[in-house]
Image (cartoon, rainbow, N blue to C red):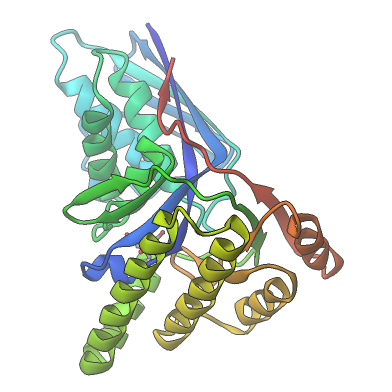
Length: 320
Ligand code: MEV
């Protein structure tokens, strides 16, 4: 039996970090995917093959003793194989278009596509059931995840997310994103812990920033809804919110010299640029439309930054 799934990466447009403390975030799935193929094998082993390494282990291993970024796949295969009456193993192959460890949701997309492909070997599950499995798998590498990244990867499109759930934004504005990569890998878990330290040491200030971020997200949702407004005015207003959100991220300490420089480069020609995801490395996005995408890409290319433009993925998890 063979089962295949794919799932997209993501950009957090507004609200990363604050979402961990209950603020609504706005996320967008992007057209870069992880593809996972799972197959049952007679040998009672779990074999995982990817371009970041391989894993070959017997079943029933203690998850906390596995030291590999491929751990979520092992977790999923072991959990689902245990539920079967027949003694089987699984072979899992992963192919990814999403750069790893730079805030574009590569590990969440792996968890979603992995949960889709491995569960598909045994039964047909809904997107929400696959999502629950994916978030459990993500917790094996990042215990305190808000679940935001897996949710947008599973459902696709643009959405608001907080820990009570998500709402798809129907009126997708007409924008493009230029993503530039600092090529500084980060650990989301580590950066989230650093923000927690900032919060503990600056409780009043952090509470104030959470309220400001909530207000900002409310304003963004109003901008999305405006029907009368011309697209060019809408995108200018959204760009101002992007620039404002970047200031909050600077305050909580997830920026650095390289990222500040990239934001400055992006701000020259785009409507607004900010860090996306955990920060302290990773990527910056710049909000653009057909008028300034090329120009913004050229600004980054001229300074030798790896960059690309991206579109919204409206499909999310695809099982085939
Ligand atoms: C990471 O992409 C987003 C964070 O807000 C963490 C999370 O939501 O789990 C930094």
